[in-house]
Image (tube, rainbow, N blue to C red; front, side):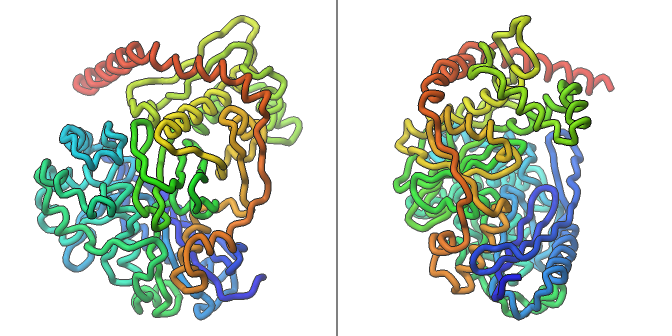
Amino acid sequence: MAEGPYLMGIDFGTGGVRVGIFDQEGTPVVFHGVEFDTKYPRSGWAEQDPDVWWTSFVEATKKAMQDGGISPEEIAGISTDATASTVLAMDENDKHLRPAIMWMDVRASDQAKRLEETHDNALKYSGYGAVSAEWGLPKALWLKEKEPDTYNNAKHLCDCNDWLINRLTGEWKSSVNIASAKFFYDRDAGGWPETLLEAVGFEDFLDKFPPDVLNLGEVVGGLRKEAADELGLKEGTPVAQGAIDAYAGALGLGVVEPGTLALITGSSHVMIGQAARPTHGQGFWGSYTDAMIPGQYTVEAGQVSTGSVVAWFKNNFAAEAAQEAKERGVDTYDILNEMAEKIPLGSDGLVFIDYFQGNRSPHTDPLVRGMVWGLSLGHTPGHVFRSILEGICFGTESIFRAMRGHQFEPKLNVVSGGPAKSDLWMQMHADVSNVPMSFTKVSEGPVLGAAMLAGVGAGIYPDIPSAAKNMVHTERTIEPNQEAHEAYKFYLERYIETYTQMKDSMHKMSRHEASKGETAAAEA
C-alpha cells in the first residue's frame, strides 16, 4: 500500500454514499459504499431522508478506514461531492424539517415557468430558455409557496453538499459551484440575481441560503469533535469545500484547462467543459463564473437517455445475443458490440433518435420521444444496435455544435462511465465529433475529484490544476478517423433535421398520452 498522508473523498450520489481514500499521487487505497433508497410520494416527486444519509456515511467511513488499515492521523484532508438541486430546509438547531427534495424531483414546474417568464438576464445560465424544474431555486420557491410553515420555520435553505459540510464542520457555507450552477449566482454580475428574485417575490431567499460562497477546495473549517467521534476520524482535520457530483467527476478526469470537456457516461450523458471566456446561448447551460477553477467558465449540457436506451434494447430485444453470451461466458454487450462491428458505418440507412425521455440539450424539449427510421426487411438486430450507438453520438455532436456556435470548442474529451468500456462506441464518438477521447487510470471520477479538493484544502497542492497534474493520469486516447468523420456527416445531418420535421407530431402524441393517463387517474 502506498504511504500516507492520505486524502478522503466523499461522494453522495442518488443511490448511496461512497467513501474513497487516495494517496497524494491519486492512487486509490480503498473504497466503500453504502446504498440508500429514494421515496416517490407522488408522481414527479422524489425524496430522501437525511438521517439515513448520515448513518450510511458513518458506516461507509468506518468500513473504509478499517479495510484500508488507516489511522485517523494519516488523513490529511477531507472533501465532498453530492447531488445538487437536492434541497433541504433546516431549523435553528440544524435539523431538517422535512425529507430532502431530490434533484430529479420536478414538482416545482410552475415555479420554474414563472422564473423563465421574467426574462431576467440571469437566465443566460439556462441559455435564455426554459428553467429546469430540477434546479434548486424553483424548488426553494416551491417550499415558500406550497409549504409555508416549513419555509417560515427554516433558518437555512441549502443543498445536499451544504448539509454535509455543516454536519462535518458546523459551518453554513456553500460553494460557488452549487450557487452558480443551480441557483443563478454570478460573480461577474455582482453575485446573487437580485432582480430575478424580486421579480418572483423571493427576496428573502437570501436570508436563508448559506451567506458565504467559497471556491472549490477552500477550507471551510476543521472536522468538529462530534462528527469526528462518530466517524472515527481526527478532530480538526481540514475539510475543504466540495462540489456537485458531476463537476467533481470532471475534476477527477482532469478537466481543468480551457477547451477540455468531460463526457460522463452512464444511463445518461453529461458534458462539463472549461472555457477561458464567458459564453451563453441556447443549447447548453452556463457558462458559470469560477464554478470549478477561478478565472475560468464552466459549460454544461446533457442527453437524458443514452446508456439507458442501450440497456432497453439489450433487455427487450437481444434474447439471442444473451443466449450466445451465456454459452460463451461473456457479457451480452460483448455480443451486441460484435454484431454492430459487422454493420457498415451509417447502419445501412437507419437513423435513430435518442429522445426516449425528452431532450435536455440542445432543445430542452420534454415532449419529444425516441424513434428509428429507414427500416427495411434487410435490417437485423445488429443494424438497430449500431444505429442506437450512432444516434447517441449524433446527439452528443449536436450539443457540441451548439457550443461551437457560441465560441466554445471542445478540443479533448475525457470519458468515464460504463459505456466507456465499449471501444466501438467510443471510436464512434471520436469519429462523429472529430475530437480525441481520453481515458484516465482511475474511473471513480467524483470520489477522486473530491480527494483532489481535499489535497488543496490540506495544503498538499496550491490549487486544483496542480492537484490534477499530480493525481489524474491518462491511460489511453482514441484518436478520430478522418475518413469516418467525413462519412458520418451525411447521417448526422439526417439526425439533426429529424427533430425539426417530427417535433410537432411528437408533441401531439405526448400530450395525447398524458391526457389519457390523467383521465385514467381521475376515474380511478
